[in-house]
Length: 241
Ligand code: VGL
Ligand code: ZN
Image: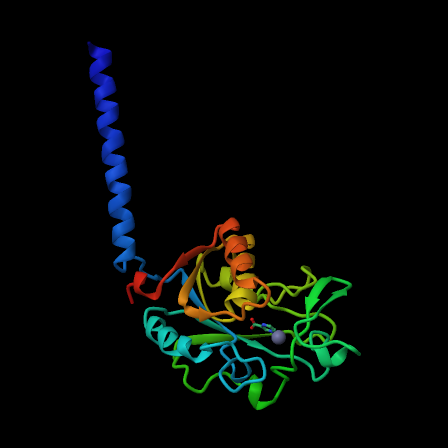
């Protein structure tokens, strides 16, 4: 009899646990994630070249700006990134005879998608969108400035060895969780979020604060890779700001 009682008790606890986890999910969906002093917003590559009219325009790329501006109000720590290429960068199709944008070539560090010329240092296309309102942004990480190595990630260049210093910076500032937004979901946002996990951060991607390029299924692959790496997908409405 005693054992039966205990079993009933155990079942009762299991029911309570399941109920609590359902409530937890509901609370999260209704705006339950609150950034704190150990959280940083990362705003990836919201630059003229990736906006409508730019040389590597991401469809509806400008729509991320008001969403980012809104959630930014909840963050004391914001890092922006800026794709910052040399004039004849190895990632440009124009640097490879006979190649065109979106072709893929083998480079010493692996496969490289070739892009139209974009985000050349010092040009207007490389400027950050003038519509961003991020008064608490304290750091801009420029990346992709080594002529022979691309860098989608804000943490590590495409050789997977050269660090931008961002992980050390965030750790020195006591940051434990990053929320990644910007352009493009399937390249610089995804690689940044995955490398954030590899560096030991909790990483969220705010889906409606990002837009993708989606070349040859890259969007589905990026989400699968992010999920596998433990990156969590949320919406801006899930954040309390
Ligand atoms: C990006 C392609 C080339 C990005 C940068 O910001 O996602 N994509 N360079
Ligand atoms: Zn680039």
